[in-house]
Length: 607
Image (tube, rainbow, N blue to C red; front, side, top):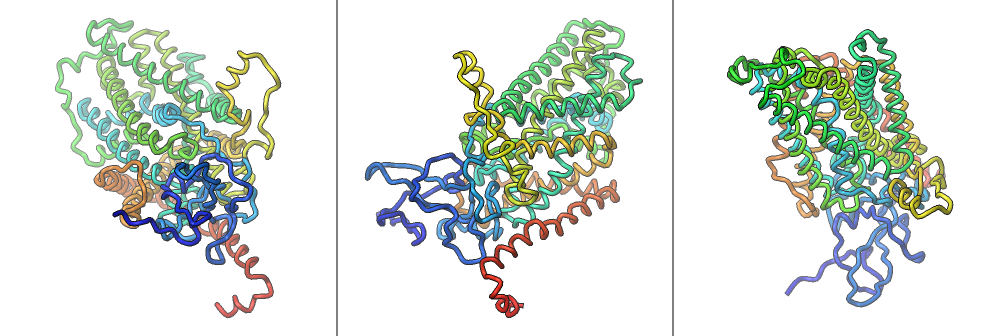
């Protein structure tokens, strides 16, 4: 005979009837739903004093239509504070509030919540991951991978190993995203598992440097290739300020696309994903054709060494060089965590997030291997090892000036798509930080005001279909405009500064440090929360392998460039006083308002 489920008094449904158990997706409750006006507000307090009322969960349910009706329940806010009798999750990371839940107790959620606008599908998630992974890396990183690996065969091994390692991290994030289906990625995972301070430090680094810095690198490469496509061989003599100006124009354009509507940004990502695969497929077909027929515009420049030379001849025996090659390969695969920033806006994150990860990574690995094989079939090793524009050299050798132009435009389009994907997700990260109170609440606003979304007047049926294709259900400009504007402003500053040697090291050390922390958190969560529902669960060896690799990469950077690594840790440490200023002071203010100024003697007594 099955034992009846126990519900604490605070969770007893009206009339004493037992409600069915709620899973983590229900309790995270990011779906939009209607609530009875008489139901309990999500801000009603039923927990010990001192906790802001905005951090409480609402368990009020609409009345059942019938005795045997089955329904899901949702809370008004996106709180993620489980009751201890249901899950012990609330004990790990005390004081944590879910992304999208403001610090201010009387904050009116209303319709100002991106998570209630669930519009992202499996295809959208796939395009975001692929769109950011396939940026400029596959068209520029082969030089660093090949020169350090020492031979074509070793270079291909590095590309496979780097892809598999990125896959282990992505699979670990898929489990975290399914168990905690909220926007924000590592921010929410670190906050929930280790405490809000960890999520704040990640946000501090990601908002200020990681996201805008990586976007600036992509924008500069976009500008350089666009100028090369327009001017041609004389592009090397052009002032770098022209490249920067074109990069800023591209940045402003993708920001505008993503400000108009979430759907338009996602549709753009879908389009660029298909264009990137078509471009890589074209490179593969051309490479195989040249290898099989020997046909080429510049036959004298073709490589024949792959036919007569051992592919592993000259393989490097230096551990340091292999590490550099692996690091360059991982850089080309970076962006696999993209979907986790917007998982709260996915229609079915429990199903679609793992599918997105386990579809995108194999596709990208296969595309990278085929593209590198094509480079080897066409270009001499010396050209691959020395050129940062391998794709343009490939196009020039096979198709002549037209091929150089087409490949330059292809790389430009690939970078533009990556810039679109990173702008989409960076805006959500900044928005979540604004809703958390980590940065001014202005950046946690949807649209320009509470009623910014624009609805079009009466129009024809064709115009309506077009509008539905690009507009959100709420209309146009129902997006985190201020958040994306902040990200754009910081990115533009980094584009103007233009010295990315230090920035690249910063990005590598800081990003893999936080990757390491989030994936260690997965292991911690497995131990502390064994009963937490996980729609997807990866093998335990997966996060262990990724943690080892992350530690290796971070330690290598520390020993190779200790001063720059020290700058990274100093920047992270600078976020500690900011945390107490932005978060700790508000907590103290809320606690003091709850006690009242006339109870000052109680605070004296505690001290």
